[in-house]
Length: 101
Image 1 (cartoon, rainbow, N blue to C red):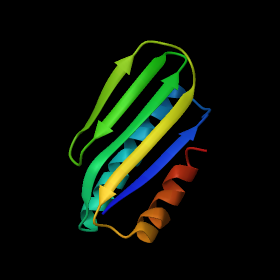
Image 2 (cartoon, rainbow, N blue to C red):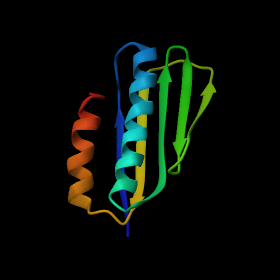
Image 3 (cartoon, one colour):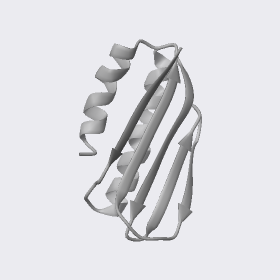
Image 4 (cartoon, rainbow, N blue to C red):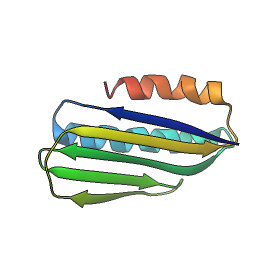
């Protein structure tokens, strides 16, 4: 079945570094899921910064980014993956998501 991981968190830091960090986190989760024999349903994140919002979307291959003007500083992150063990996913995600805190 599907496993859903979700995070909503106020995040601080340089917007350019945060953009790259979120991109690499999504890429790492997608690669890890595929290496485990799993299937990426959808990994998405929305980062609101003082410059606007970035919306990230990945279904296992490319990561698409859509930029929207605006203000704020807030992160929403969701990963939906299939055919991997929940405990393994938790163990793999914990250090990746700790970086965002």
